[in-house]
Amino acid sequence: MTELTQARYHAGVHSIDHFALNVPSIPDAKRFFEAFGLEVRSASVQGEELDLRATDGHRWARILPAEKKSLVYLSLNCYASDLQALREQVLSAGAPLISPVPGDKDTGFWFHDPDGNLIQIKVGPKTTPQAKDPSSYSGAAADARGACTRSSMQPVRPRRLSHVMLFSPNVPAAVDFYYRALGLRLSDKSLDAIAFTHAPHGSDHHLIAFAKSDARGWHHSAWDVDNVDMVGEGAAQMAAAGFTKGWGTGRHVLGSNYFHYVLDPWGSFCEYSADIDFISAGHDWPAGDFPPEDSLYLWGPPVPPYFIHNSEA
Ligand SMILES: [Fe+2]
Image 1 (cartoon, rainbow, N blue to C red):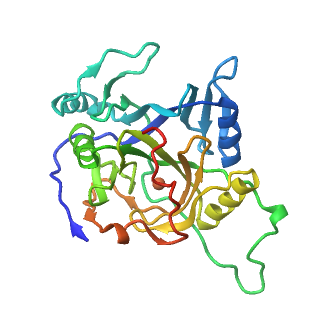
Image 2: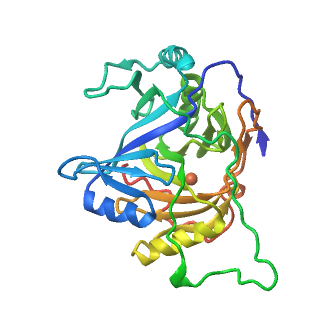
């Protein structure tokens, strides 16, 4: 592992507010995300748009109808005192601002990143944790049962969004742009194949991650649950609902989170994630470059061939 350094000098976003995803079937989306444990609400009279919420009550995603699955936009939040500096950083990083998007009432601005993803920056609540979430897992005491019965298992409901991963045809260029424009810092990477970035005001080890592909694309959203047991229970919950394909259960090396990825109906993934590394505000995380064979997972089943497949390429 090689340690990498980045200069520290400018403003940064602090959170993901929400993402908007086009999907080819709203009924399929409703079934999938409800089975996953999210609260799915109709966001229009005819029910052709959905909102996704976790148990924290935040609206983390909009699901919109389209011919094909794709990211519509990613909305990121910042402090009011950073908005103007971020606008200037985006311009000096080479991304022209887009005139206000119709219907947008937020105070903020929009632009395309170098891969063509539409990004919104606005003043909004800090949705990333201030400190590491408790991820309690302790064995049962003597003389007590450690597991409940299958029939009494409670549904798994993610408590918040943790991160998103995008395919990029040029991962180093994406990392460089998101650092210069938005202040996201490199957490760790593996060659030019995969990179993880965090926000400078305290965030999970990855807020936005990038994986190499021929084209841009949406790889996964990851949702935080209480502990590794709930990651496994989430996998069982999805299997019972008919969503058996994916990758896991296992533990990542970069980010250290326990994971289980479930294949969605459009070839991308939703991840149950627990106990991901947390980088405190102002902490200088020693970003590393890890060889591929020593970066992806500490334990777990082999990676299925469809896991790093860009269904939008
Ligand atoms: Fe992930």
